[in-house]
Image: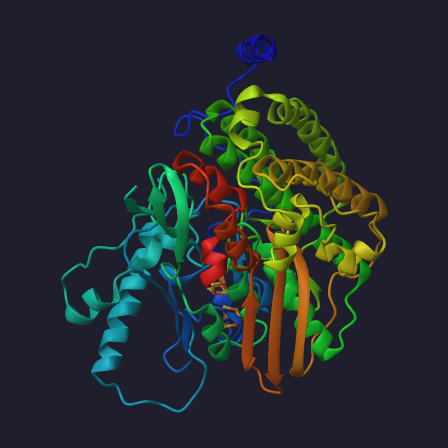
Length: 177
Length: 358
Ligand code: SF4
Ligand code: SF4
């Protein structure tokens, strides 16, 4: 008896599931999704580095490097909460999974500090900066340089270290579909 | 009759997690069961020395996915007590709301898996369909579905606004309405009774002597629930532990289903009484001293021991989880049962092995 009722009510109601790729889920506003960076505002204060529970953010104030190992990030949102200038914010955009370790790098205006000799390390960093600048122009969806989506600049670190000139290392992730 | 040894798990269709039991059988009857644990040890307790006490909240949340909020709650309470922080009342209520929502979704998950374990797949689907509504509430209020990361030392990170609270109340009504027929199926259906009534009986004395916890203990007639300790906002809420007396799989099942309704009522009451105020207090300095704290997880009593020596990193964090307490009772239930009943009995303690091994 109960079964008949259930069958009838199931026939008359909609599916509980969604035709996923066709029908996208609307995520709530408070969802902790993909990061949005306004990295020009970064003052390299190290708050995010100190508070991150997985210690995946690295900052080099001398060359102005802000780096996150994307795979280690929990999307806990602590860095966005503690950032005093609001250059890290979380959007409610779904974050697709990645399959390989990748680094997200930005170059920020370096803090005035003691000058360092330009070593081979410096050259690599210059290469990174060039790469980042190129990516920013190509990958920013809003067209603005200072705001970009997270995975626009992800690329493998080693690939760059090995090929400082010319060769284009494959970015680990393409921009949003 | 010759004895056979059959390994049950760690990979078994019925088990959500790698529990390994070595079953000695005589014909089809279990004579002895020996557990083997250690398949997913991650060393999270050791990680405490490498993280400061604020960062550790996110580590303990990952001890167990399904009751992450309650792990964080227990740990935060330890540190707050050590530092003498006075958590705002609104934060206490919000913590209760989130932890009870966690209990609802954990119990619904388990009820679904349990239905699946005795082969009632449509009930499994129906229960998980309801669970999805709870996950949506969690996602909308806390930002994530499972590991919600809302607790911080000194309070909570997020607020729930009035409109959202009204929305939650409507959702809870809908959840309750959808669960009522499923409850009557679970309680009255012939198939369910055939597979669970009188199976895996744990007597009242055994339950106490073997130190079981949570629904296993309450299913055997003991009215013990850590929420009776009145932590957080439970001091202001009406709370009576749910107790059943039979001690079999059916009783444990019933305890959990009734607890779902109880948690729905608790969330409603907490929303009704939710006071205004701050969300968190400022934390200054480092904790010092040692402390223990107990809370009620969906699976039973969760126990934390934290020792700090005035530095940023806690010196020792010791976690005792309810599944660990429930494994000896499981071993006491198994001798004498048929092999076909082993999955149902093993699942009836709601094993959370990643909790147990940390
Ligand atoms: S969101 Fe990621 S990077 Fe930011 S604090 Fe959390 S783990 Fe660290
Ligand atoms: S991202 Fe924000 S918190 Fe991190 S260094 Fe820059 S300004 Fe500071």
